[in-house]
Image (cartoon, rainbow, N blue to C red; front, side, top):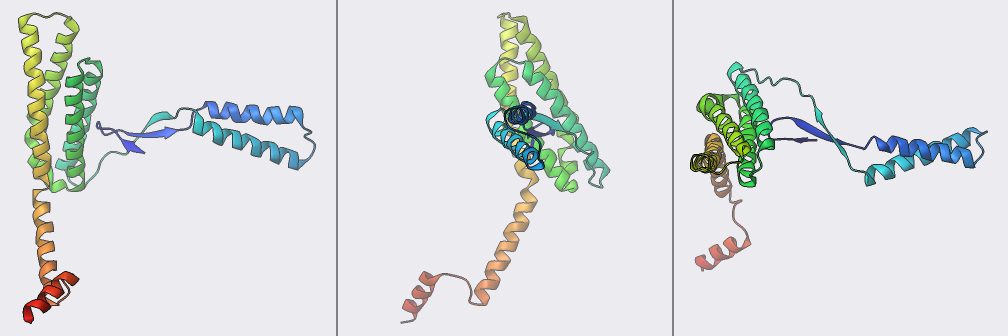
Length: 227
């Protein structure tokens, strides 16, 4: 099971045609061979199951969305931020699908991926929610507005100075925002990195005090220095 940037989980299922293949195998066996003993039915069922298994490997998978329970972290601010963020991602993804410029689509995809990771970070640690208030109240709504405007300009099919200029500015703005959001995601883990660094330092000091740190090369150096 995987998660798309818009927060939806997807699951790959075997093609529904696998059931037809299995049924056809069962019926074909029953037409060719006798079916008056229980073992004959069991063998036919085994052949049908084998046909299903083989066809499920050969036929394309069917990707379906999996309904998720509403997010609940126990923190109302974090829950609201995650819910709003996921809804904005869905709206942004819908607009991206209508845009034809590959560069703009790539920028939007990267932004969606980063925002999805930010939502995951808030969901895992609700105390981070206040740090993305500006993202939720301004950047995401403005981003959706700009992406929608770009799609409408692209739909015009014109190449006037105002249209091309506006589209170029929006495309550049997306690149800038993409970089800024990556920094925002990194900053969310700043305190975690400090805590981890502190834990590592304490562990290293304890190992050194108990004579458990360093490898054989360090021990050889110490022995050489004592001579």
